[in-house]
Length: 420
Ligand code: UDP
Image 1 (tube, rainbow, N blue to C red):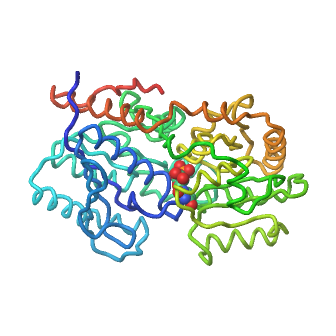
Image 2: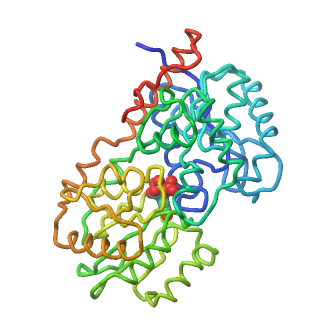
Image 3: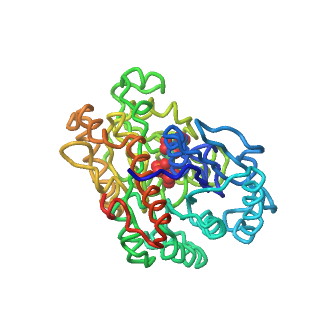
């Protein structure tokens, strides 16, 4: 059996894995990092999670699970510098990382970076320490730019992602579609790209009594409830969801609940509220703000349908979470939804243009209300997505990299063979 790397440096520079989920920079990546670190820690790996010191980040080193520590990095600059503002400060972050390693008195066997900014830092650290470097991008700039969401990622990000995709030892892609993107648009060597899906906490996300869940949220049994859960970034498509909702044949008591965003009065929430007013649907749409993940099963269980209207998702955790709660999903052809949704089992795929989105929602809601997707079958469709399996698969990739390094190979083939 291959030996597991003992000490892992996990980098998630721009966003703390323990920040408030649903806010601008804190979503699926944070969930992924905290769940993976926890599972790896339980398997005996010692994991240090490095993130920038800041308002949402840690101040001092603190435990974050069995064998897991959260470690703040200093890079100077201002707290509210955006992600790109961190780039010129990467040398300071590297010094801080190296100072921690030296003071802590240990070497890392492997570096796993999350998102391209951390990837840049991780590449420098891994080269310095002679450790293998794995990268999970979480989103790809080139994919976002091609999605038509109206936001363009800068050339700097695109070129750094390309350099990382071609230069690191292993890229972990969450779907085979993302793997194809990495190969086609970022030049990643196919043998170095492994497909390892993301996961869901099947113990937390499980079907709750629908009537009781509705009561808790002030909804009636006869309400026809569509739910959106996510950040309010343009790529997530909340605006086109409002437009489709306004255009669809809705019938009485149809409600759209939006969970997430940066809170009341924030520019992103204010813009969507204004859009809803202009569309004349304010009375039917509720902005619930951020909700603690522990509370979300109530929202999923109360809804007839989770809608994922994104222009692009690398994976799309909320789809798994809703399905684990027995709630069907209507999603554009993105992330895991494109692979997982089956009209005879758990939901519908939607086309993204405004008319088709509205018609698709109408049809999905009709089928959900008619009981076309029994909850047990919906839940069963994601039973293989527990985080324990994800961690096992990631660990196989780590072991592979460690074994190749021990044998002096520079470029081992992905353990998953690049197939899901
Ligand atoms: N989330 C949350 N509370 C909110 C909004 C979102 O806990 O108010 C969580 C949600 O449960 C999911 C994650 O944030 O685990 C969003 O992940 P996803 O992959 O769907 O989107 P991303 O943020 O990566 O684009």
